[in-house]
Image (tube, rainbow, N blue to C red):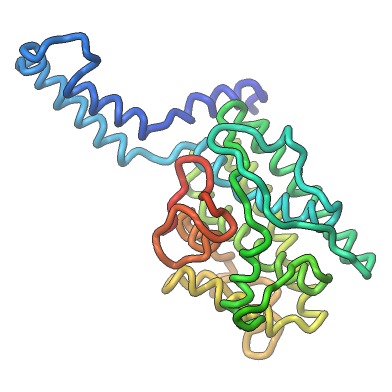
Length: 316
């Protein structure tokens, strides 16, 4: 098994931005470093070099997504979950030392402590908050200097947009996800199912077995969270609202068939899965459709008003 330093070194090396490499390679075919004259640039040797560079750039465009890119994509999602749960349980978000990195660091809009009335729900919320905090710390530790900063996050207005789309509130009304335990559980339902499908969709893209094992472990934790949230909602009579949220969420990935409500044919559906008993998957682009709250191609919106940080930042 790799030691931590070796893991960080591997990720740092794999984190090279291939877009920047393409820019450099293509730039070398024209005004090429500014150190040679126009006559040399037009020579057969330089033409051949330019052709080779263009071919390399084209190959880079089709290169596999690096493991670091996938980990950074996951880190963006973990920032959102960690902030949501941390505010609900403690009244404050992540400490600053866990939010800096590459890319633009943004603020968190909204978030406050939930006045829990049931000890079991509060304890479970606190456990999830701790898990998500640890996920953020894990990804940041493994990514090292390649870790992205926390992007701008809106936990206030985005839930209202979801509630409107699901028909839980009427136009002009707002949905305060921190107002009570039931609203909190509905907000958690939005996140947890998406987190499970995100890790399932990312798994085939990960090449290093050590990283794949870590991702599988986090997927399992997110699945535990999702199942418990779904169970609580079902027991508290929240199936209709959850089904409406699921339908609205599914509409953001039209034709994908990767979402299921809390009940099917009038029966509890705690585990959303396909006919083979396999959990659904979302591609990174489909995940971004959900968190950007749009079925269209976009690079920002919804819970991430300025978009996520890193190379995987555009929805499908």
